[in-house]
Length: 226
Ligand SMILES: Nc1ncnc2c1ncn2[C@@H]1O[C@H](COP(=O)(O)OP(=O)(O)O)[C@@H](O)[C@H]1O
Ligand SMILES: [Mg+2]
Image 1 (cartoon, helix red, strand yellow):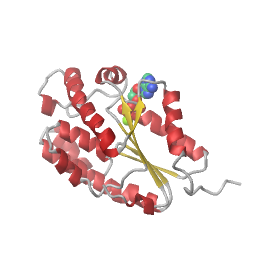
Image 2 (cartoon, rainbow, N blue to C red):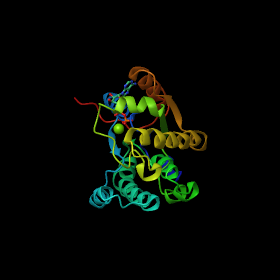
Image 3 (cartoon, rainbow, N blue to C red):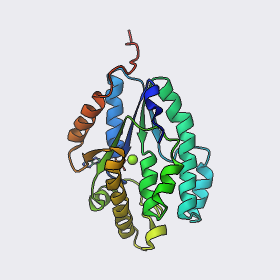
């Protein structure tokens, strides 16, 4: 990854972890807090670039992806997001909050059988985050939170393309287990800050704020509203 984030006046905080680990909950609380402290924030999420949205949707529906083409389409999505929605606000001094980052590709694509070095090299244009948070939780616990919660687990989320297990929840558990192994490997490699995602929402948020606060010296604040 690029190491020039220190040239930018903004900060980049990203959250990682399997589906249901509580990333979005925590990032949205962090955003509210930063705003209340007078910082300008900018939110960006995985799989959000309009550039490849239609192609991705169609190819998912028809289950056309191989691990490599799936990886490349995500990298394209991320490159577009990076150039339009991550680097410009960082240059403008904003605090960018990213829900999933390149580590999602490293974890999922490698769990699908893509070469670890190849995918890391593919994402070398990514700006190194100020802090990368990893919400660690077991696949069983995550399933409990997801089932009955948000939308049904999809074919690719459950990794059926790689596990070939028909039962969607069972496939999710197996696939997410491999994704967790990849995340665990990345903690030391990339210095991710691990948050025990079994804790209460409040406790996790307090730990995030402590870590973030230590990096905010000199970050631009907006003029107070009069
Ligand atoms: N600490 C927690 N304890 C119990 N449930 C939680 C906790 N954090 C989030 N949840 C719930 O778990 C579900 C998944 O949370 P979410 O933030 O959407 O996870 P993610 O973005 O990682 O998929 C939501 O229903 C959310 O309300
Ligand atoms: Mg989420």
